[in-house]
Image (cartoon, rainbow, N blue to C red):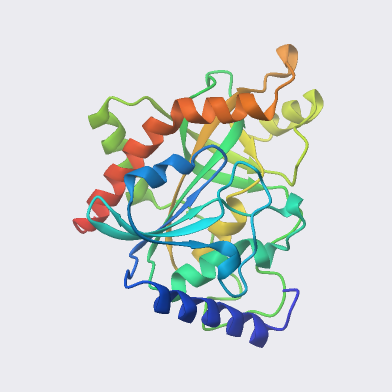
Length: 281
């Protein structure tokens, strides 16, 4: 932790208190929307939209494809809070800053966290535009948001990570995808720091380690969410095919375009899962 536990806890509580004054929504579900995936916000009946730079202690997204707003409203009849844009190590933020919003969500009463990201596909069976349900992850960022003194009121010093992505929520996602006729891959997500994309040798190594897709986010937020006892569910959109023997250069515009292709599928699955959470699942 880059600042004292006392000041960090105070900052989280101050942000939560500010947001309670700004909205009457008391969210049950938190949602983090990644690169090119912000349009899920269109499905949310937004009651209050709050820019990150207006929230005390909140980082500000510097990535051009991230809107930088916290949305309060309802999705499928369930009260939600959604981050339209997230934060990354490559922007210069610390792991504690990146995960600050998750701590705030918990303070606001969120019990379930849904996360999306754009990722490079390394599994040869995956194709650009596929949706992948994350079953597990590998952290290769070299840092952890729990480093430093532990805040016992938030969670244990050594949180268990044997099942970071809730099995019951994954089963719900499978049910929704089947009902909607959506092909949904499943696999392991490996996180690196970025911001550069990987070399041929790196893709080959990551695939041999057991990863199906690679990205630059999600894992810090999930670690903190699990530390605080939140149930987690996460999806990757395969935005490019990262096969070492036929690797082609890729531009950000192509990544955003691919995310857009998969976005309706991800939106349908997320909406269906939220609806079932609202029904007590």
